[in-house]
Image (cartoon, rainbow, N blue to C red; front, side):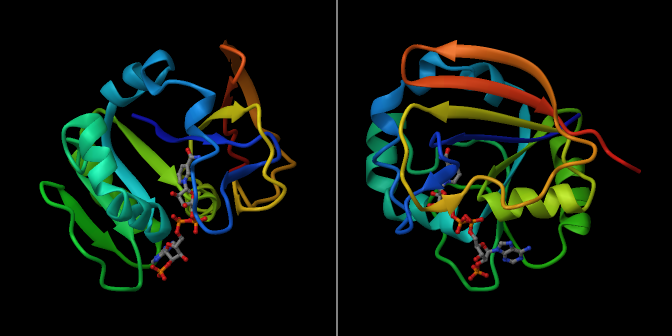
Length: 185
Ligand SMILES: NC(=O)c1ccc[n+]([C@@H]2O[C@H](COP(=O)([O-])OP(=O)(O)OC[C@H]3O[C@@H](n4cnc5c(N)ncnc54)[C@H](OP(=O)(O)O)[C@@H]3O)[C@@H](O)[C@H]2O)c1
């Protein structure tokens, strides 16, 4: 069972524009032609921050058209927020606030022998990293730059550095890098 931060980023390290748009991302590749179907089949629980969740709330209609449901995940999801957020119909959601350690324990129990997907954003992935709970970073780097936006991973990782375990080209729009997080303790 691994805890994995799996995401797409612009070439200059942003998940989304400053106003949370992902419009730059979709023309770069087709999800079903990526590693996503294999990845998601091994996921037992998800974690996401409120801006990521609120994107799903705002785009529920579009997501439903594309996937058949406003919430495309069958796994339980933990949404991190200090605020009261709306529910999405049919979603198995737990709201969480504060330290990731205890929530991670809950998520492990729910995921059983499957993986935990930290969907984003970057600082939430950083909180799992800070807590020594992150095992892998799997990042699809898009052939686009944004100049500014929501950061991929606002942390300083120098010693030990991440260990590159695979590189894969996905057409002309994306390259996927997989890194193992080596823990210093
Ligand atoms: N490119 C991709 O593949 C990809 C992947 C993931 C996300 N995204 C996009 O990237 C953007 C990410 O936004 P973001 O960087 O702002 O990150 P985010 O993690 O989605 O949201 C950050 C917010 O989550 C809440 N939060 C985080 N940690 C918490 C904790 N431990 N306890 C309680 N609340 C906590 C806080 O807000 P409150 O307390 O005010 O609620 C915080 O401001 C979104 O637009 C998303 O759609 C893109």
